[in-house]
Length: 158
Image (cartoon, rainbow, N blue to C red; front, side):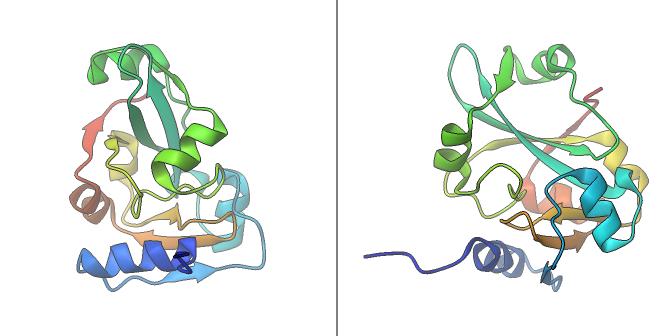
């Protein structure tokens, strides 16, 4: 049996199940990069949530780091919070663990449980925007709601 639910629909369902009334917006322009996403939704680059999937080196577990569009993840700093070294995951591992392709990874709606860490710099904004399953789909959320619905641990990533 084939699952006919699109990635943005899966994200919308996860948002609804979390009790949020935010909507997934599918845009004509690409939101693959933080800069492009900020331009498409009309916000600052720092308000864009970059959903970056890493793989722990020793245990080979997926780790999702949600960082501000302005920031780069310092892998050594993040490893201190996580408890082991990490490396960027390859595209196949990202799709296998989240169900999304790189450029559209959402903070929610993954097909597997993924440990999540959230850049404390995102908490500086009243609202932020995150990918919703494709390079053209996004949703708006408050940082407080992002922490709540992902169960993510707030850390300093840079």
